[in-house]
Amino acid sequence: MIELLNCIVLHGTELEPYWCDRFVADGDTIQQLSLREPCSSLDQGALVIIPGLYNCHTHVGDSCLPDGATGMTLEAGFFRPNGYKYRELAKRSEEEHLFHIVNHLRYMARTGTIGHVDFREQGVYGSQLLRRAAEETGVDSVILGQFNTLPFSAEELQQNAASLSPEAIAELRSILSVADGFSESTMNDLTDPAWIQIQEITQQSAQFRAIHCLENEAYRNESLAITGQGDLERAIDRYQPHLIIHATVANDAEITLLSATHANVVLNPRANANLGLPLPPIAKLMDSEANLLLGTDNGLLNSPNLLAELDFTYKVAKSQFGDAVHPEPKEILKMATRNVGLFLKDRGWGYLEKGLPADFVVLDFTQAHLRASRNILTSIVTRVTPEDVLATVRRGHFLYQAKEFAQG
Image (cartoon, rainbow, N blue to C red):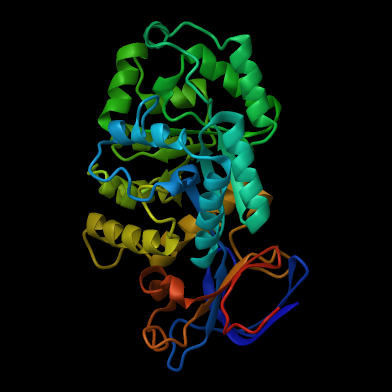
């Protein structure tokens, strides 16, 4: 049992801070929440309990290569078959690779993250490796597999008529027997008939589909040249993804499409900035009906620290809105909590109520830089650091526990 007294809890789907006389998690469930009055500020500090964070776009497979692609373009660093990432991953032993992935997941837990959606390269082997790491650490890894090598030649992709071979379909089914779903890098990696086949197969098995769209103008332009549709429109028509990654260069018409379909869209502003790409139109997307999530992208490119992502996203959004009022900080925090629950359903609710899974993070707001916060939600989004995380708990089990946190 985990019991906390006289603390502050972000309660319910709106993440409202309340004083809480007694917070009890027993087994895998929140058993008691004795709430008092709302609390927006502090004078003498307190422990603050927030929902566990979900990082909705990672590539933990390349965590063994931190900052290895510095100075490289997106194509040179990350594209198949000859990008830096793929060349280097092929050199790693299974033991070394697993070591780095496990440590990457443990760092995520250290920073308040209980789960992530990972885009796992290297076919069946890659998905199996991450499954082992997730079991070792307790972090919830939603694994989206990828073909080990692209199943079409450049000529076949240009002709856009070939279907998946029996061998490719067999590999896909093997991946899906380990992973939670599928995602190739871009719509331009496969033909339209292949995307339709994958949509049908994953729909039959009720598994996730995801895709990187509009990370740069080339994604759209190449798709237009081959099919007459941009990559986003093509993805929605042919593949019906549950998750769309990036939308970095989404124009007004594409944002309208994302809004009309209530798409789950994962923003990655730090990674985009690190690659010299435009920042995503966060403000316009926040004004739409799209469901916005956050991701840190490649382990070799970025630290998987969602606390840093929340801070950066909030400040970029404020700059884009062009005033001091918008957005509300809780709307940014929802991108790593409540909004994720709308995507994952009962796998990750994204908020705290009695009877829900015990998925939460304990923050130390007795620290000097937090104890007199005038706006607790803003301080969570902009000031909390990994050193302020006392515990990360998933389904009642500690993924991380600071030495000074004497619980459990």
